[in-house]
Amino acid sequence: MAKLSPVLRNVVVLGVVAATPLALAACTEKSAGDGAITVNSTDDACELSSTDLQTGQVNFEITNAGDKVTEFYVYGKNNRVLAEVENIGPGLKGKLGVEITEPGTYTVACKPGMVGQGIRQEIKVTGETKAKSQAPADVEAAKVRYLDYVRGQLNGFLAQTETFTGDVKSGNLDKARSEFGLVRTFYERIEPVAESFPELDPKIDMRWDDTEDGKQPFTGFHRIERFLFPPQASQVGEGEGQVAPSDAKDAKTADTKANIDKVADQLVTDVKALKAEIDAKDFQFETQMFVRGAQALIDEIAKTKVGGEEDRYSHTDLWDIAANIEGSQALISQLETIITKRDPNLVEKINTQFAAVSKDIEQFRQGDGYVSYDKVTPEQRKALSDKVDALSATLSMVPGAVMAK
Image: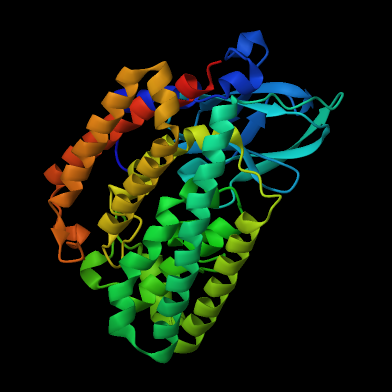
């Protein structure tokens, strides 16, 4: 994760607070003293003040008492993400509101270090089934249009993935290396939707950090990336954006042609499964995740990309960063008319900040792609990080603007 100042970290967390589904729940964020469920997240525990809840609006107040940046998730009955709050720094608090309309057993998870499946536990929700609060009609219409965009990206994603994995398996490795940055852009543009599937998302996009030091299978794009761009001695270390010694050691024995062919086949299977899930007529993308999606995409940059952790073998991070920006802009374009009606100054500020970030990225363009991220200096990364943080803070006001009735 990019190193943020304490002040900026607070901005990020408060942005999540502001992103709570205001109209969905007609709610006001509650403090723990007002009945919110308190969550004590440490590096090895996720303690809730209660696991017996009632249907309706449920508020959580998460305290990060650990040493790692943490996240908190609420999963629905089908293991889909209902709500999440990310980037809670050590010593800080985050708040999350979620509307649970049906009784049953749900799952919550703290993710210290923001990797893996997290520390999970079940919560029991009792009470009467309640009608789901309705978002404004224009927001629901914008979500429908946005999902058309997402499905279009998935068409390109599957086609490019099949080409990429075909080149890997046929031994056309130089071509596969040239395709690695491009093929991931489709995924990076729609990451908030893809992350609704906590089983498929890590299989497609996991990093070595998610394998518990090799105890879990290392699959997906980054496993193939490691094969295509084998870690060099100069890259190995424990610093941000470096390849962990255990990772490099594993690569020497595990990245055989036969193993990578299997990973490539599984990747195509997983991408097809993701596409089928999102193409399904009954697929539902939670409205609160939709209205928070533009900020979530920008926060993806701050989490793992500015520091160079995402593409640590190939250094193609700028492809991903540009794609996150493009995906965020695409989502905002569907909401722009609504935001303009309710807060025209906010739209102007968002567009100005998008332009500033895009200009920063454009300076690194090289041909049809971008320079290797290890050529971007610490000062240039800091300048980009500052603009990303400012944009994230502004986008945190979008849910409040569009959900107001």
